[in-house]
Image 1 (cartoon, rainbow, N blue to C red):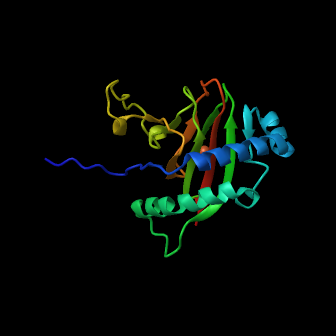
Image 2 (image 1 turned 180 degrees about the vertical axis):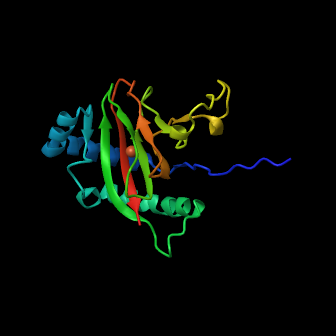
Length: 201
Ligand SMILES: [Fe+2]
């Protein structure tokens, strides 16, 4: 017999960071959280526990060298993942669309979402204290499953409906932008700090 695995959903993960880069990113995140009044106001209005530059700043790589450095370090990984996905990009390369920093306070979360109009999305982890949120991915076929039974308790990762990635500081996670994901509540006693981004054609 043969058993085929079709319509795969791929998640790219690699440890790409250094303690030095993370220290610089952490300083920059703290500085932005302090100085970006528009960002803080947006977080308050939208119930974001902590700080994100998502709605207020669109120039992090120009604003602080460490973000530019991170984009450079990520580049070959983005290219590798785009190649691995075997997408026909018509000779083009994906390019950075937006990049933002997240300082997620204890108890903070981010409900399930996708990133429309983009090709690849991902997160780089700067600070992941013990008990910090994982990243939860959802089976994209979920709305079509109707009466399909749930997988067994002992089902392996590729047969589960939800998969939790527990990143470490310095890890990069990449996925296709249509893949729904969420950040469950941060159970750590301090902030979880990350940098998220989208790439488009
Ligand atoms: Fe996201």
